[in-house]
Structure formats: structure tokens, C-alpha cells
Image (cartoon, rainbow, N blue to C red; front, side, top):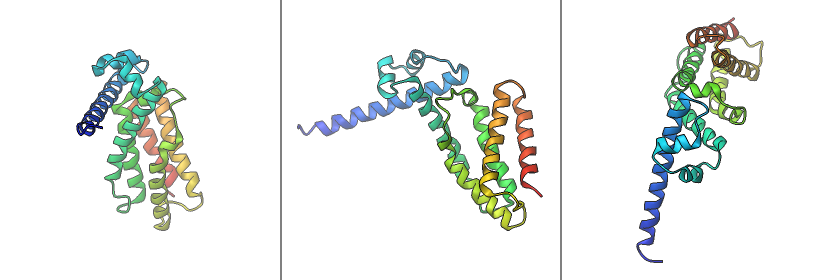
Length: 191
């Protein structure tokens, strides 16, 4: 191996990373406008070849999952900035829900994902925070103890999904769904 080989490998890796980032950025923009945007459209918007898109994302579902993972990562960065150990637990839960809801408002594609892309494992970091907050709220007497923590967390996630589905199906405008979600969460968690 020549002494230039490690440099060439780093350059190829940096080029590949730039291509992947460009593809994800283009995919988010296009899919927000049209959930059925093709891989070819994504390649064109990212200024790469279709083969480059398929080299990074072998199928549309793989690309969609990568897009959702990226948007989830962005939302989690905002959620990580929230101090879950300070202030009333229900208020903090509502703050976390608002941050997640903001993701839906900024990225409508999240409301129209095919079942093949919807994965419950993405809820893990939020589930942990909800559990912590509910336990803290129950200890402080803010949240009733008559329902198990796991049930309350499942109910919070289900309410969030119901609000998103109502918007996606045009049964409720986003603002009304958000307000209804808040009201439902408050009624669920307060005595």
C-alpha cells in the first residue's frame, strides 16, 4: 500500500459522507412537499446520480427510515435541552409533546409515512423521559397513582399518534389537534 492510500481513503469517505448528507437533505425537502417523491427526484435534487442514492440507500424504505431517523435525532436534540427534573411534571411533559409536535409541523412527511417505516423503537428516549416525569409527578402528588406508569406512557404516545392521524386524514387542522392533545394530556395526568 502506498503512503498516499490512507489520504485517498479519507477523501473518499469524506465525499461519501457529503453525498449522504446531500441526499438526506434533499429527501427531507422533497418528501415534505410530496411523500411519493421518487429516488430519481431525490438524486436530482441532491445533485448526485441515482446510483449514488442507491449506493447509500438500497431502497426507498431504507431512505425513508434514514430520513425519519435524522428528523428524530433533531427532535431529540431539542428534547435533550429540556431539564426533566425541574418544574411541574405535567408542564414538562407538555413541553416535550410540543417539541415533538413541532417536528410534525415542520415536516409534514412524518404524518404520511408508510407502515413499513413506522417503528415503535424510535419512542425509546421519549418513553424514558415520560416515565421519569410521571414517577416524579406521582411522588409529588401532581399525577394520580391509580394508573401504572407504563399505561400512562402508552396513553401519551397513543394520544400523540391520534392527533397526528387526525391531521393527516384532514379530520382536524394542526392547531386544533395540538390544542386537543394538550387538553387530553392534562385530563389524563391531573387528579
